[in-house]
Length: 501
Ligand code: SF4
Ligand code: SF4
Image (tube, rainbow, N blue to C red):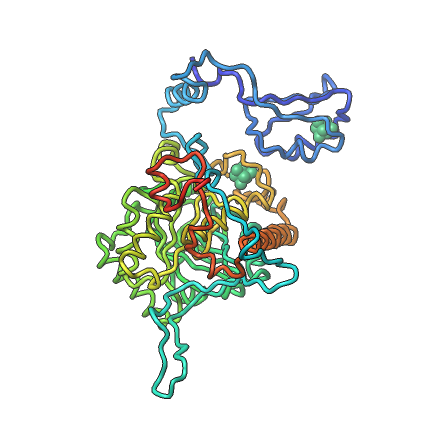
């Protein structure tokens, strides 16, 4: 028996009394769920193709549609659950590795939800961000160990190259190819207006976006797609991607079907060729090798650009971060195991890596213990969902956060988790021209700006409540955090006390 005999995961509920057979749902669904039957004069649904992206539900003019998770389940038990059985059937049918998109959905602990923030009461009064100055600006890059003065006593203000951000959030790497031109345009424009940075990912930089260079991080990954001198010069910072939270230890694979037109030109590979990034950089097998690449990139850009090294959060992340800090990199970016992706093997995504909260706390502590915390800035990502996650991350020791899933949600993503199919009905994770045009970059950038503006206000309110008026004063201030429902070991790693203490 093949997987096709399994009852579909979702059911399309169509209210026939409301349906006016306008066929909008048929035109909007790239998965071809809806068809019009002239013989029966009604719409029909092939639910086996439905991924629950909610596009039809959102655009149905009469609210005739509803997609629900099917309550027809296999004979599951506590050990053999519905999804596990389905996966077995799928693999027995295909013989292939299971692929997924977006971040790890497993019910593992989300430590952000087990950490609570302090507020000032009576002494050390709170600050009202509407009436009093509050600084959300941050600078990323190496800082001096101590204040330096010249012979005349003047401050030495010469710093290594820094990234200036109006707030401690950036848009994380998403490559052109994995996401659409219009999604990139939305991110680039929003970052530029907001005074933050977005990240090219490993797909190169389309020539139309060079004008946003001062708000762009250009990535150098193991495949070196789209990397050339002008590209390196174009960005405000260069990121060496060693790993990614959704798929630590493996490379990337963008199918040839997506390497078309501008994507192929931007990546500098022929149309239709699979873009395969190797798991390792073939020139990096030690911190010394990494140091060579860091300095090659600095040399290539006249030491004017900070270099970021991005790694996935894994078991020995503190030691790895210590090595990266000594490699000459200016910024380390750590991606937790809930980080999103356009495509990853399901088993890797769901079982490899560690939570960003624990990785962050461990790295910050290690760098402090070794006296090298100022020599590198720390950026964390891998499921930063809201302003309070940002505040908790800063208090745990981060200088700034990367967001990607939250950003694509703002663009209209409905987390259907089928980015790898290239049929994103919201025009985000697709290269199909008819789908790409569904995302209007004017609206997309406006929604990203709205989201970040809202988060900035919330960050200021949370900081004000603590009596703190700058991100700098919040950074690494773990006294502002308390844990709930955490065991001794977890509290020890996070470096925070339990609520009530
Ligand atoms: S979009 Fe709504 S009203 Fe139009 S055909 Fe589909 S279900 Fe019917
Ligand atoms: S980006 Fe598109 S395909 Fe990917 S999860 Fe979101 S809606 Fe689905």
